[in-house]
Length: 249
Image 1 (spheres, helix red, strand yellow):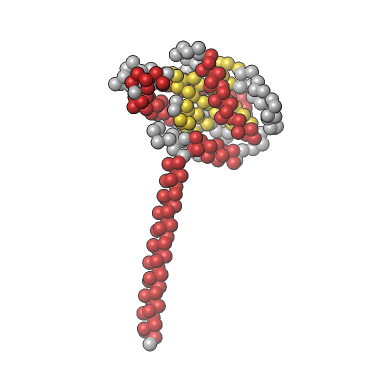
Image 2 (cartoon, rainbow, N blue to C red; image 1 turned 180 degrees about the vertical axis):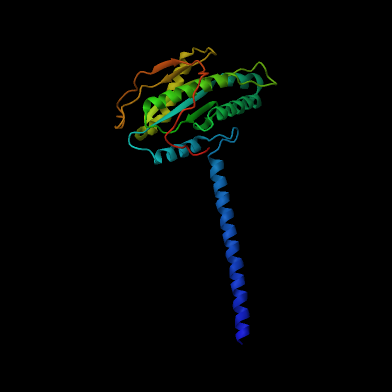
C-alpha cells in the first residue's frame, strides 16, 4: 500500500513539475511578446528609430532621475525638399532618402542622444540631462552643426540629382519644464526654415535664450528672442561629456 502511495505521489509531483515548467515557459513567452509589442509600438518601421511614443518614453526615463536644477536639450530637424523628391521620383525614393538620413543621424548621435522620427520628414534628437545649461546649449549646437553637415552629404547612387538639406532648431529647458522642450525645439526649427526663404543652403541654428532655472515657466510668458548661430559644420567637434546615461533606443 505504501509503495502504491509513493508511486502516486511521485507521479503527481512529476505532473506538477511539468505543469509548472510549462507555465513558466508560457509566462516567459508572454513577457517576450509583450516586450516585442511595446518595442514595435515605440519604433518607426521605416527607419528603426524611436517614434513619437518612443521619444516620450525616453524623455520620461530621462527625467525620472533629474535633479531640481538639471536642464534637458533637444535638436529638431525638418528635411527641406522631401516633397519635391516625392513628387519627382515617387514616394519609394523619398523613403530611401528618409532612411539614409536616419542612418546618418544614428551614426552622428551614437552614444550622445536618442534620435527619433516623428513622422514624414521630421526628426528629433533628445540629448541627455545636464547640470550646466551652458554646456547643454554648447553640446546641442555642436550636434546640430554636425547633423546639418552630414545630412547635406546624403545622396542616392541611383538618383545623383537628389540632394537634401535640413532646417535645425535647438531648445534647452529646465527639467521641470520639459513638457515645453519638444515644442520649443520644433518652433526654433520652423523659425530657421522660414529664415531660409526657400533657399536650399546651410540653415541657421536657433537657440532660445535659457529660461531661469529653479522655477517653472509661467504660461503667460512669451518666448525670449532667440540667439542665432550660423552653422559651420564644426569639423573640430569634441565629444561632449554628460552627467547621466540615456536609455538605448
